[in-house]
Image (cartoon, rainbow, N blue to C red; front, side, top):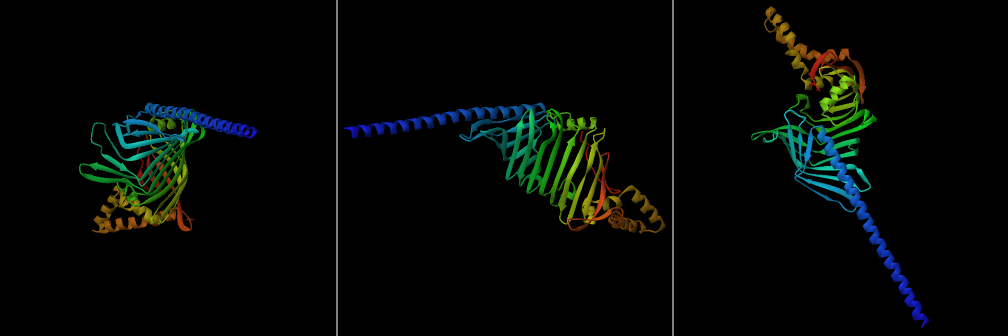
Amino acid sequence: MNGNSATLQSRRRAGLRYTILLFSVLALIAGWTAFWKFAAGKAEVAIDGWREREAKAGRIYSCGSESVAGYPFRIEVNCDRPSALFHSSQPPIEVKTDGLMVAAQVYQPGLLISEFHGPLTAGEPGKPPDIAADWKLAQSSVRGTPTAPERVSLVVDQPSVERTEGAARQSLLRAKRIEIHGRIAEGSAADKPAIEIALLLNHATAPTLHQATALPIDADVTAVLRGLNDFSPKPWPARFREMQAADGRIDITKARVQQGDIRATGSGTLWINANGRLEGELRVIVTELDQLLAALGVQQRVQASPSMDRLAGALDRLAPGLGDVARQQAGANISFGINLLGEQTTLEGKRAVALPLRFTDGSAFLGPIPIGSVPALF
């Protein structure tokens, strides 16, 4: 009898332990579910806050439909047929893509990671799009809050951008990989921030931009923007105007570009004049200078310049054909002359020349030779 009683009590104790364990598991699940819902709400509030911030800068984002998933460890907001309307552009631009997923970890709702699903189209609202883009993978990350952003990154693998004109298509950009990273390096979003921006290009081509960008380029450029009052929502032209008014500057802390055998590095400081154009100087070290000048079309530009026309005309009057000889010699001697003016050095084990890259009211000069111009920033 005592044995049966002891066995019964043992079973009751075991049953009680299992019951307590079961209720503990259920309570844990209920508590985690409540925490997930709380974190999901925080993430949605953060997403809505970013939308409101962008709307203040004239960028309106919307979804065809929206759903929340990811339980138990992630919060995923899926946006079907997202679109963006950029009122700050003139004319306005409407961008549409197939899908967007924004995710956050339940323990870190302030870090939002987005994945974009192509293809993407862009054009004026109400008109057929004239820009089409696609990619293998496109992701962005945003750390911080809408009122106090800290870091923003965008990474795109194998992007392809084309302009469509009727049935014709023109390639604007192709690359193996593009990365853009931005962070507040000094100050805060509300008080005199210094914004560091890094751009990385891997095997990028842009054949319609310039003849020099028709062949694949690798680039790694880091710049710091100084002179902003704050980082409140506003279009970039307004930010650049603010920098100019505050005598701000753009510090190019690191720049490395490679195209085939051509390699170039540089650093220096630029600023913006009252016309919205760049001023300043970078110290550039470049290998294969003659190849670079040919890629930039410098020889053709000098040979076709008004001063060269006047000289060639005068020489032709002395002896027919002498002007053409002068044009050819002028083009051939540009690289030699710049090499003499520059400082001989080495770059990554190769012979190189150090030269100033100057910007004067947006016009760029490599040493004494004009190589192009940069559009006004506002």
